[in-house]
Amino acid sequence: MRKKIVAGNWKMNNNLNETKKLIKELKNELKGFEFDNTRVIIAPSFVNLQQAVKKTEETKIEVSAQNLHQAKNGAFTGEVSAEMLVDIGIDIVILGHSERRAYFNETDESLALKVKTAIANGLDVIFCFGEQLEDRTSENHFKVVEEQLRNALFGLSSEAYNNIILAYEPVWAIGTGQTATADQAQEMHYFIRNLLAKEYNDALAQEVSILYGGSVKPNNAEEIFSKPDVDGGLIGGASLKAEDFSAIVKSI
Ligand code: PGA
Figure 1 (cartoon, rainbow, N blue to C red):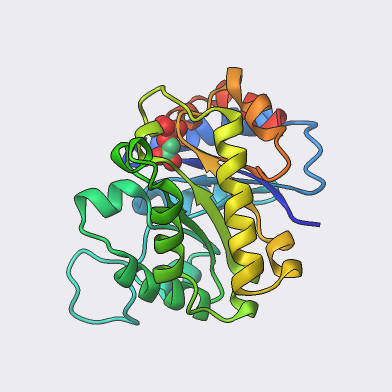
Figure 2: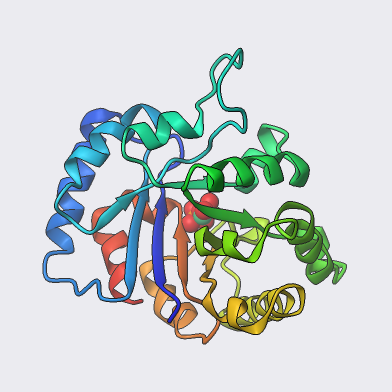
């Protein structure tokens, strides 16, 4: 049975003290929560990952990085390798977030390399993709999403999908308060699962968790998560408040 997943992308927020405080509050809010088949993940900034790993020891909360470099090591000033992440106890990385694509020139091709490196190092990948507003208004959203997946992921072997979590994030819904409707999310997730079934096989398609991201809040999470092909969410703004994030976790 595929996993339900709620992941909090903290982006470039929270210094060390704020990181520790938010984790402490989250642990309190999630006391008694039955994790069963659910993964709860937080993604603080690189500099606070080590402390976050320490502070979540003996809890079921998992810690993810927000990026990595595809090379093993070398002259890449300012970058962080997969090995460095694994070394400090990280086993998940977010790749392909629309902010990385927009502000740091990440492309499907460079992301394909990053995904391969992450998987070769045993990391789970939360792979983000999604259309721009103009793609949706011109009704090209299915085509754009298919191309993103084809270019970045469809070179992978079936086994690699044991480490892949998909996160459909329509760019027009990120940080805008304008969430996709639950039906729009379901329609796209269904399309993606069919695509996986065609490209690989049905069993694989049924096992891959597909998260929705883009203005998920405590007041809309339940409806979005109730859809059969929506396996959870990637949460930005609302993951910065323990009360909101845990309310979203509890609505899974
Ligand atoms: P948001 O961000 O929840 O603030 O819209 C989602 C994301 O960027 O992953």
